[in-house]
Length: 435
Image (spheres, rainbow, N blue to C red):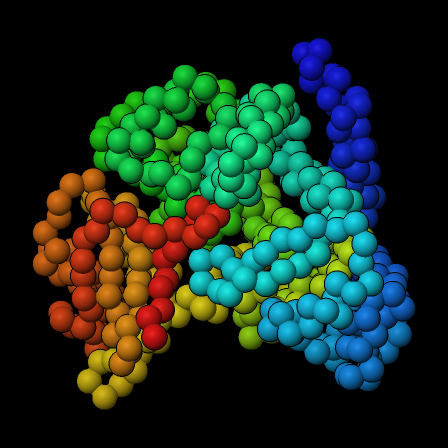
């Protein structure tokens, strides 16, 4: 209790203050018209600073003949879409005017790395967004957390890497967090994690969807007992989550499965709310827009490099395309589409749909699709025991053909493997495209 008081009163005092301010803002402004008015005012401040102080946006405004300010959210449709390729091609201009920054790189499970500058205040603002949303579910700073984590590469190597690792262990102890390695999700390790989970008995579990799903499926298929009296929720993040995932996780752990949506370059953008299935966008930090089911965001916080009309590559379902306040569903990524040649036709298949089918097969834990040349698809999977590949194929074809009647046995290649390749951050690399 003394440590928690000291941390909240001194070390995290600014972050606690930011959380309080955000909660008060969200209580004060609730009407949609007032929210949009706030967003326009905030955008004009951010945009004005960008076109005056950042060489990239000076060029961007001149190149696209952009105004000095907007009058309403609809005006953003006249702004060009900002892509990762634009950022990759203009690194010199973007970083030219900046000082005292670190960088984050994106790439995830399918894309090429892109570097973004980050300032310290951005980390504090992301923390405030995070814990304002977590408070909707009863989670407060320094509550007991079990975290599946895969960024150990950030420690570095050699003596310096070891020192950084020990610093992290001490830091985790102070903030009441226990980390489990998301890189290693073998069957033996899953049993070890199950035992650690029972002993640690956290208030919340946070981690990649694939890691938590795999642990939940292991517990269910082995008929293990899971009664954690302190557990209040499971937070899945960084990867797509299906209705099947949510149903399994909630069925095993007997608590809500909470969706955290964001990206490395933006921080957390939206969170599940506890009164419906929608994912609530942090409207004071982002203007979110939908065009043809694709999500575009504009940042409204004090970022070193604001993102204006930025293409996220994510597909969403929403009732309002102008300024999204709630997302009803994250439907996956634009890159999650695979091509399959069937006869003389080329079918475009949803990777999410195929994952959903295969995850429902008893014993299968992880899946990866390889997009082969000539529009062929190879499906790799891991399982708790040796499975009959023909049986897996027959089950898959029977279910997938309900949506695509043209598909028949032999159209896919199947292979059971020991491990599925992960990204450097420990995420499941579930689509691999071979050239």
